[in-house]
Length: 311
Image (cartoon, rainbow, N blue to C red; front, side):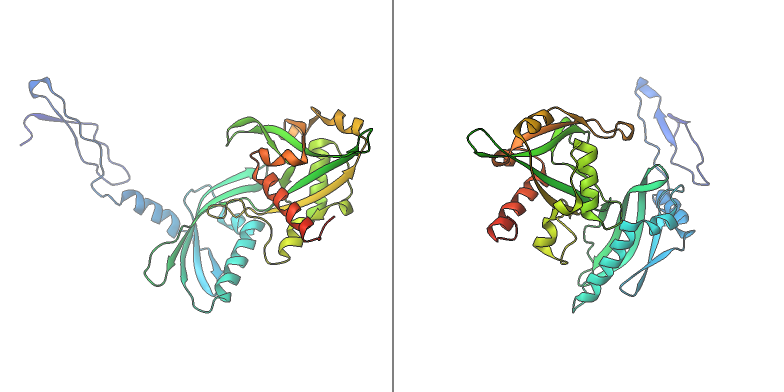
């Protein structure tokens, strides 16, 4: 049957024999067959073997859910100690307990990748196998976990020679590779450190990114005024990420000449890879920039002013 064929590139992998790669020799025409595995579940078995060695579980609403890693270099135990992950487990359990009728069942959590900031975990990507009890269908469960952040709408007020009040918003421009942009305009922001001190972190980010010193008590947490304890903040991408943003407001009176000097000022922590340029924009033109943090902060600011919750 195979008189016109010869066997090439036959390799045994972990005890599994791939299909033979056959090349037809007649008429100088070549026909290549890809190296498909005889056992199509080879990779799945290999992954299952890796995961079966890991007996770590988490409790979600009284159900013991296995947590496994798809890479051998991932320390699952350290992932479970990552504060955003612990908060997520607590929150998803609370949500499950709060509903009258149980609609979802959680089968497993697969940790796909972990990025570190030095010795600390920075980001986690994982997949939750969650299914509707009614029909067994999976709900979207891929999560990019990075935890919370804080952003500041910093409004600088000044008066000109005619005593007219001018309002400018402080922006930062810096490279944002995912967008991609080498000078993306946005309001000052940074990741939370887990301490729960939102205004303290906000004032720290303002100082690092712009050089402007403000006091914690000068900051108003607009998300707290808007949501109370119902939500942890504003969620920019709830379909794929756990990130929430605390949106703070600071209104600072300054001399117009001091405000002008801020334009083009260099900021950020160079040893942390930050390359920031300070920019100014009129408050009534802030809606023109593509930063969702700025647009959300502007929306809250105007709504809270209308409700007379802020001046």
